[in-house]
Amino acid sequence: MKTYLVTGGAGFIGSNFIHYMFEKYDNDIVIINIDSLTYAGNLENLKDIEKRDNYFFVKADICDKEAVKRVFTEHEIDRVVHFAAESHVDRSIKEPEVFVRTNVLGTAVMLNEAKAAWELPDGSYREGKKFLHVSTDEVFGSLEEDGGYFYETTPFSPHSPYSASKAGSDMLVKAYMDTYKFPANITNCSNNYGPYQFPEKLIPLIINNALSGKKLPVYGDGKNVRDWLYVRDHAKAIDMVIEKGRLFETYNVGGHNEKQNIEIVNIIIEALQEMLSDDDPRKKLVSKDLITYVEDRKGHDRRYAIAPDKIKKEIGWEPETMFKEGIKLTIKWYFEHEDWMKNVTSGDYQKYYDDMYGNR
Ligand code: NAD
Ligand code: TYD
Image (cartoon, rainbow, N blue to C red; front, side, top):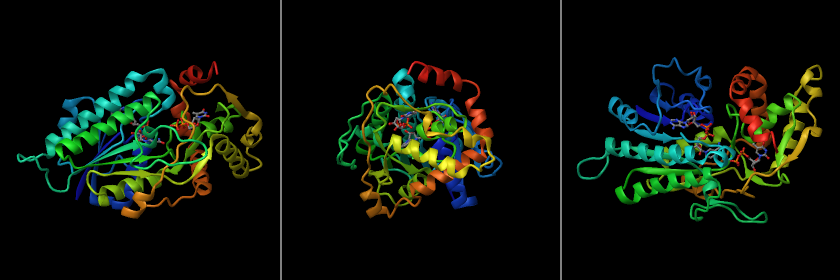
């Protein structure tokens, strides 16, 4: 019976990972979720899980050394799966410090407390322990439009405060592996989409705006390229790297699914028009006329694209959900969870939206 300490499990990918793990392992694992519940953390994402006897929630900040230490003292942790981070590029451009605090300092605290709990007097580690650091392809910077991929060996070249702080966290994990032979893996994944994603990110923002007949803001010329992966495939990759990844290695995770932003917006509009029934009043609101080109993001990376060769060859992971299918599953989820969307867009969301898009 393995015990997992998941950080940031109330966020988008963390909550999908927890769902995936309980579906797969049921009562054969214990999960402790530590999350400070920022605007991006939502316990509603885990409603169907909270009553399980093998799930525990701890509301705490990963920068709070004592709180993190307590979790390691009270539980025999076998695996740390570290998701907790500030994750939105646009917010990082407005407010970089909080990204450095959580992403860099918070990762240092997690590494240090895991090391203190797992290290033996001779400098080796207790059997079967592993720290999985969840990171992003954005640490590698931006690719040319006409070619090239990110490999595990691609040098870091981050441009936004978000990607710079994630690169800092990756480098700390690498330093722990090199200096202390700390048992860890890093995964660098491309853009995720799927259920429970907060509507500050492109796909849920476009779905939400289109359904309410609001403008669909496309930054710059709309031709920036992202490599989209269905979130459940990412959860599966993380589980497989924990089980099969060679210690001290980094694995790139991606779907070979490159799309320009404007293509994504058009696909969503067409899927909504196809999926909404004729008597649904929202059908009349959804239209390509809503597409509005707005001022570009500062320092906007042009193209991301992952080469997932290593994870495929060494671990046997491949994406299973084609984009055509994944986007429909995602839209269907948002159709069926209107209340979730209403709840997350009440409160501070409108202020965020006005700040971010008001003058664009
Ligand atoms: P998210 O913003 O949806 O969730 C982040 C979670 O971390 C939230 O629950 C939040 O409350 C929590 N959190 C934030 N600061 C905290 C702190 N100081 N202490 C404790 N908890 C804190 O993010 P996400 O999209 O689920 O991303 C999760 C991880 O995956 C991040 O590390 C991100 O860099 C990485 N990643 C994301 C993507 C993507 O497309 N979303 C792609 C690749 C990698
Ligand atoms: P986002 O979902 O923020 O992810 P990331 O910046 O981490 O890749 O944005 C995805 C792409 O969509 C990115 O090129 C910026 C663009 N974008 C828009 O054009 N309009 C929007 O309203 C948002 C949020 C993003």
